[in-house]
Length: 258
Image (cartoon, rainbow, N blue to C red; front, side, top):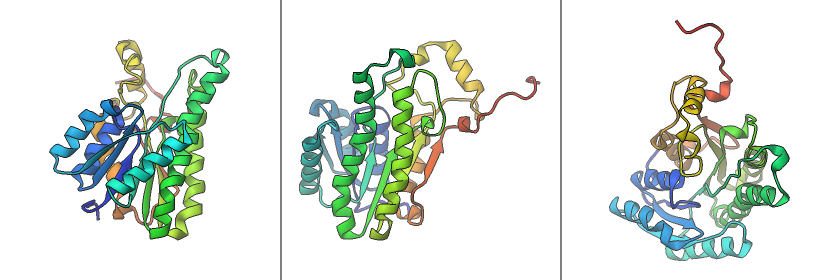
């Protein structure tokens, strides 16, 4: 049920970080992959890794802030790879600022990239999925889909929106054979947030609030990603699955450490 042999996956924002991890995870499970970035050259590393696993990898230039770019990439993926069965809607960005310093342009950049882009990419690929009565859409959210953090107003709004969008699309396309779920990572060290992890006091602060006692490793996401992309999750839709070491339970110390 977890075997993806013969499946075709489309992963946005796959040049680095979690997107690259998702590409490798699905390739190891048997899928051929189309991957995107705003710059083609940046996809070389991911493509090489996927091809080393014996799977096809199609690199595509795509900017989720441009509708025509989304349409062109989706069409090219289906032309070169075949019908797309799986979408990992991963492309995203963040601008960290206190709320009073957030500009109009900051808001548009983050929310349009993370939420508007995700919707229009899902819409474009869902056309073929609904026609074929089969599809797995995995929107990448965040612990900020369910929790609020200072300095992340646009990001939290966009990720909360991803959770709501997931539920809406699940209802829209459920009777057409397409499941839509949200994979929501907690705190993982990536290129996007690496500056935070240079502060050892902050890392200690975060890890004390994670019941499993550590931040995530990219490989911690593999199982959930494969589950949601596979037939193992055929009766799961509209759900947000947090892979966060438990930080979303809001754990605080009720007694001193022994």
